[in-house]
Image (cartoon, rainbow, N blue to C red; front, side, top):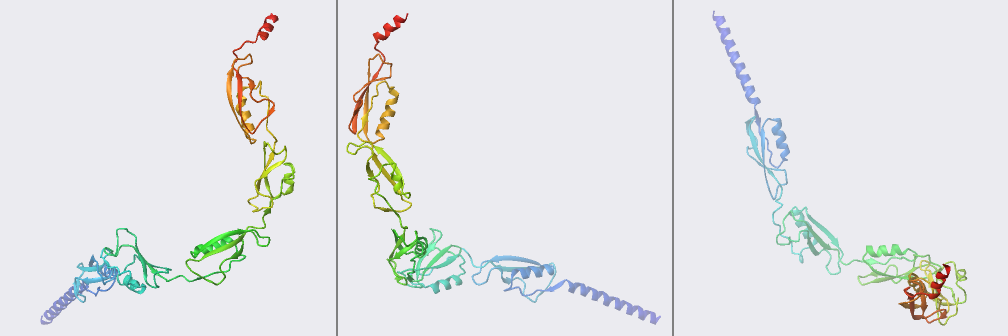
Length: 385
């Protein structure tokens, strides 16, 4: 009996120990130790919380010293043991406040190194620093501030505002290059890229190809200043020498040069006889560019002769006078309507008819209104019956 009782007591004690052990294991399995999240990324905290069944509550705030997404503080101290299903609050940095006012350095006293340090210190990602040549502002000094928003200035500038700071590289030192035998395009491009003043003068040349430089006013290697103007002489080729057309007719003119584009005009002239040259638009012996080769030759039609217009329809008057005036005269006219046995609208008389006239004439024209009977025609009609 005693032995059985003893075994029973041992069994009870062992069972109690087992229950206590299991209970402790269960309890300890629900307890976790809080690590130190401060100065670490917020993602480390959230990942730990997910793995350990602990809710991580994030609260964001701006901080001038701590980088964005870094944990500033935590509600439960590291090393503390907590049960799962608990929650921990962490304060996460949003970085520096974009709306914080930032004092802009004095333009006249600040240097390039000052500006770079100011930009880094204040985490100004919207500030751009550019360098430009200046003959007035010494190297490393500020030329100007360019605020993107016209309402922004040195007194109300914030971290989120965009600002371009132009820093002087000092006066530009540029030496002349040799462009002789190079193209005009190459020389102009170089001048434009380097903000150099230049002029181009065209010159005929039998030896230098059209479009290439013959000479430059500034020698190769010479230092250029802001007020330097380079004069380039550019070849326009050998050119075309304009012939003397005074001794040839309009039909023979084209034979003198096939490189000249001729335009022939024929006009009346009181002094130059028919078929003779009155003028040429470009003086003989002149050299012209191959692309500027048009010459107008004006030949004489002699003195103007006004032909008979009787019997012509009134509708032809304007056309007739237009054709005369296209040939160098200034003929005007007046029309009078007269009683006549001629068909209505026919010309019966002109103040000039089949005769030589001057270059400027005002001619009176009589046009039949058809209101006068012709007795001869009437008698012929009756005789027919």
